[in-house]
Length: 311
Picture: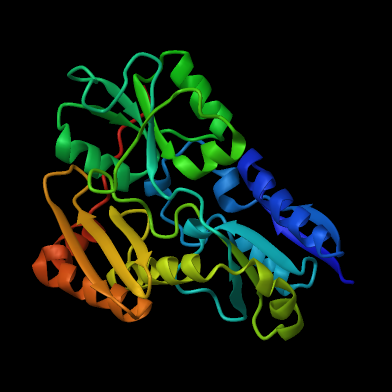
C-alpha cells in the first residue's frame, strides 16, 4: 500500500477535513502523513475577505507544495478552490456532500425574521450580506473573520446579535448549539461547492487518481460541477455576491443561482433544470448576464465594494 502525504491548512475545520480523508485512506491500508501549510488567507486575518480579493488565497501555497512533491494530495473545502485550477493540477475526487446551506446562529433570537431593527449581524461573505440586506435592509452587517471557535466566541460575547456560517463546518465540528435556523436556499443561495471537499492532485498523476477514486461521489461531482460552471461563466470572485445551489433528482439537475449587488438593492435569481452539469451551469449563467448580471458585475468590479469595519 502507498505512503501518502496530505497537504492541508491548519485551521480546526481544515484539520478535521484532512483527518477525515486520512482515516478513509488508512481504512484502505495506506500509511498517511499530514503536512500543515499556512496560506495567504490564513496570514491575513484582520481584513474582510472581499477586500483581499485574491484568487487561490486559501490554496496557492498548498499547490506549491504539491507541485514541488512535498505532498501527494491536498484536501480543500471545494468552495475555496478557484473554478479554473492553475496549470498542472486536477481535482481527483469530490466527496459526499454535507448540507450545503448557510445557518443562522444567535444567543437571543430564533431566526432572521426575529432580529430587531438595526441588529448587528456578522458574516465574512458579500454573498450572505447581499441576500440578508435584500430581505432585511435595516440590519447592520459587519465582517467576521477567524476560525469557527473565534466567530462563535464573538457572538457569545455580544459583539453580534447573530452570525451566519456554513452549515457543513459546524456540523462536522459538532458545534451546533447556537444554530437556530438552517436557511433555505430560496432565502440565501449558498456558495458554489459549499459543503463538499475537493481532493487536488498533480495533473496526470494516474496512480494517485485511481487510488483516490473511491472518494469521488457521483452526485456531489455533478451538482458542484454545475455550480462551478455557473460561477466560472460569471467570472465571480470574493468581490461579487454570487450563489449557486444544484440538486440532483435522478438524471435531472435543478440549479438555483443568484447574482446580487452587495447592498442587496438588486438580486437576480434564476432557476433552471438540465441533464448536463456544465451546460446547465453555463446556460443559467448566460441568462443571468442577459437579465442584468453583466451590469452588476461591471459596476462591482469598477468600484471597491464597501465593507464596514468590525463593531
